[in-house]
Image 1 (cartoon, one colour):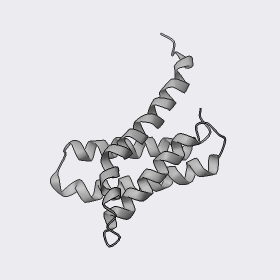
Image 2: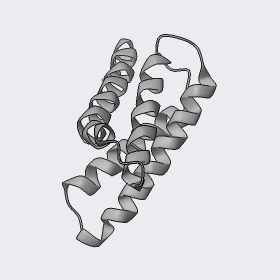
Image 3: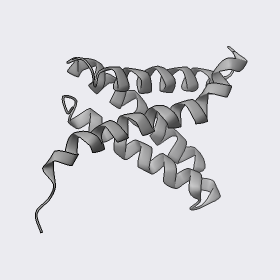
Image 4: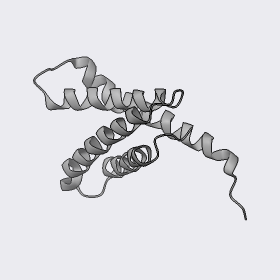
Length: 113
């Protein structure tokens, strides 16, 4: 059976949309509390900005922005994975691994549309 190559752009856009929706659901409330003395506030801001940049760069050709945003999301996801390792294998850890893999995809292939 042959792969359906026409669905590649659709899958990439679904990854961009999913990353943006995850960022909104996971980090928007933390950002709106605006606690400047909390590390989680800065992580939330960085993640939200990076996810938005990855989404926007789907419309324009700015590989550098996509690579930097992918790197930021990868680092934040790695931090979250390390932070959640104590609790064992749970849904949060699995989701962070999936988000890290999406970020690594955009880090390694920034010009995909």
